[in-house]
Length: 459
Image 1: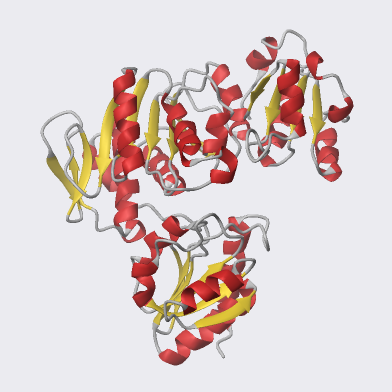
Image 2 (image 1 turned 30 degrees about the horizontal axis):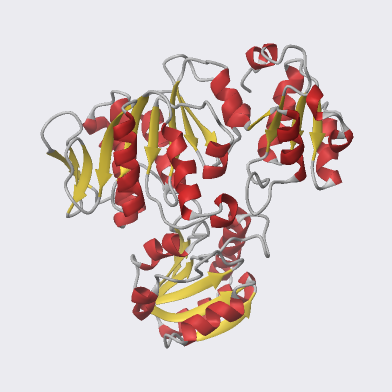
């Protein structure tokens, strides 16, 4: 675990408030208590406070005087601005104390390691994992965490020549006011988390804040919002901007044309390799690969070593992950597709799809997916979105089964696909998971569990 003694020294003996006791803030409590800080924990669920107390925190945060605290360390999911700030946020602001998250703590340790931070509406987990995989394969000791996998304060400290690769959500950027990674990566921008940020402009500004300070900026430029971001960051003059595209050649960046990766970062464009990598199929994964390539090139790794490492990438567990094939039917876990834009990337890759869709819907629902409906053989709709999504699909002449829950949807999809003799059973929900699952990982794990059961016990 990363030592936080240096951060504790800056608190000048004051206690720390921690609110929202999930995975990341449990690591915060453990790390700060171990370093000698006094921590007072709060959560809307009393059972979660008990977990923090077991690690050495005090309880009673909401009954205490907030002016006594050095800062409030807030779980990223707690409402900060919209639809209304949580009471703990209001009290912290009234007391004039900083509100930060664990990534900001890591930054304030001045640890001296290279930091690559990756954000974007879609693809950031794949790009983060791929970047870490390439660096590790090329002999650079790397720790991966943040919005994916391990909380940053539970990571090991790499040697001085090592690196941190951190996935950053817009929520975490909001709570990291001085965080300035050496290499900041932004992939794309489509409507998401509007309830959190109040508007698309608020969402844009949150993402753009990742580019404060000096360093390199690697920015996908295949959507209007991201092109604006590249222009804005370039105009600010603090970071060198390298564009990434999978739709057009770019000067001073990396692009993909006809399935081949081209490098124009430092010299004239030259073809590096064909991206014929099964775990990185589709234009969206080509964008992820191009961004990861650019980030690792900034670390000084030669192109041939990057491509060699990229070819051994196993893929991301819940992002278009091929679970197995039963007879002539392929089963794909794309549980991480929590909005329509993410699901579009999966639908574009397959035909004859038996589509499991639904959950807790986000703003816009399935808008933008009309052009993919000819690829759908049958849709199996679950969760809170079941009625609305079913009506949307039926209006576009898609055959629909209202399956309600994932288990039923998977079983129905399996039976129909096997009966029809082929195709793809695709879990790509275009929804959050929280109506029926703790997170998208649990949802994907359940799908995999059911599919493996069906593989072992064919009907």
